[in-house]
Amino acid sequence: MRELYKLPESITHILAAGEVVERPASCLKELLENSIDAGASLIDVKIEKGGMKRIEVYDNGKGIHPDDIEYVFERHTTSKIKSFEDIFSIKTMGFRGEALCAISSVAKVTLVSKHLEEEQGCMVKVEGGKVLSKSFCPFKEGTRIIVEDIFYNTPARLKFLKSPSTEQKYCLEVVEKIAIAWPEISFRAEADGKRQIFTPGDNKIESVIGSIFGIEIVKNLVEFSLEKESLKVWGYFVNPTVSRATRSGYHFYVNRRYIKSKLLSSCIDEAFKNSVITGRFPIVFLFVQIPPSEIDVNVHPSKLEVKFRDERFVYNTIYKAIADSLKSEKMIPKADLGKANDGNDAERERKYTEILSANSNDISLVISEQPNFFEMFSKGAEVVIEQQSFENFDAGNYKIVGYAFDTYIIVQSNDSLYLIDQHAVHERRLFEDFKSQVYSSNVQSQVLASPVVVRLPSSQKEFVISNASVFQKIGFEIEDFGKNEIVVRTWPALLSSNIDTIFLLDVIEMIYEQMVENKSLVEISEDLLKRIACRAAVKGNSKISDLEKKEIVELVLIKKEIFHCPHGRPVVVEISKREIEKMFKRIV
Image (cartoon, rainbow, N blue to C red; front, top):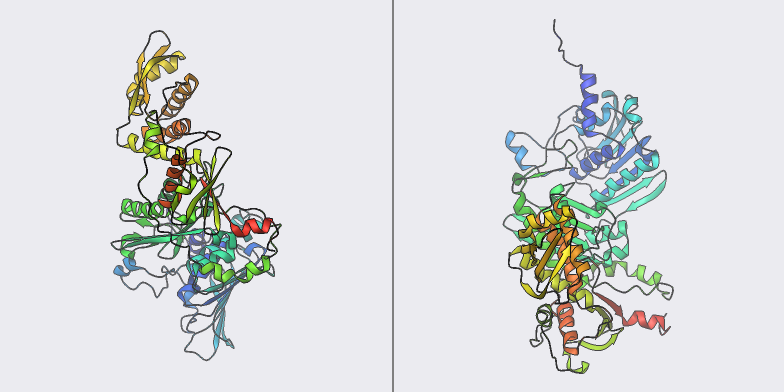
């Protein structure tokens, strides 16, 4: 007796719809992509009750011909693919011809459209995948599609939707993400009668970002770009002083298609690892332009994922583009002295467009070589430096004008003051030096005049002895000293000769905990060298010479090599003359 039988078409359409239409937001995404493919310059969205009751999308695109309008609801009807080869050269947002079929299978749909070559519009009503009526009607231009009562015929799926407010959030996020990739299109979104989103359609991504995330985000944007062979990566990240608690600020686009990607997320994590405070994540708008033949966009039902042919090449190119831009002077955060004294909010808004298009000033300065303070300091040598006055440091427009709390170097340049944290700069420099040594297996060690004996729990002692080579690679020479004791004969040269047993126990504990979690030596070193660099760096409330101050200013403001400590905190803050004058009420 046969146990297999073919499902009727009425059921297969509903099952297939589940792959494309998971919730109102995924339905809206498909409709927006159709409008983009139609060449629209204006897309207007209206939703009610989070899209569960009604989704309406209007666009002023080329429209649908009356001869085609009822067939758009049939499965796999598309004008984008005509041959097998076309699958590997897809340049449009939609291509499989199943979006409207899937949507109409689980909702009530009304479609009105006027093709640019026709004199009147045509209206079709579809319910449960069946065309109920087709008629001609007056219509100015473009296409309007109304989706009502989504999942009305599949109550089991309906009950898994969230609250209307949550579903509304998902819908608006879809509009925002798509709008960023298409700045030449004006997007308007309304929810329950209230305007939520408006983008100007002026073909400036900064304008879209500003309209969605606010002017403060735009003012902190840092641009990056890099082109290699047929691959081009570009975009913006926000100065890491503005960050998120999650990766919700990651916006990835491949050939203008918004995607989710573990590969790209991993690349961003790695690029910003030492520039964002631990536990926080940057805001990034990343655009990848790549030949369609080098990717597969058909690996996910909703086209939210792509597969790269050469993942390593893409990863390395993105990483380099961002790493190079992390040295930009725009990385210097502006001090927020409070808006209470600022009576020019209206004026700032009036100049919004001007701010969006403003470019950062390039600074090209050259100074004579100075002794390498950091190299001398890390070797623990006795350093005698001739004291020099601040006035002797004059590199272009930069002048050291003060020193606060034996911690912060004060620098004046044009109409700004810069406060530089000496500990944070030195810590980052030592961190980079030590990381380079570890990765090249060339860590410099110093022999301790008096070896240090440390007592450990038996479990840790056996671990340390059996992994002595691991400790050796980061500068610690450790030997068995009998019973539950070990003897430490060397440690990293960047540390002073004043041994701190408590610190040494912390290092052993950190390596022990991470090694038992099967983390690699590289991962251990990334965490560990931050602690070692912090331990070795010159502290706050510790006076340093004028020549050492000059070395720090050169690294931060001239060479632009350091803008964050290893933990992601800023090393320099800019305070404008205007902000100071506002504090003293010299201007209002």
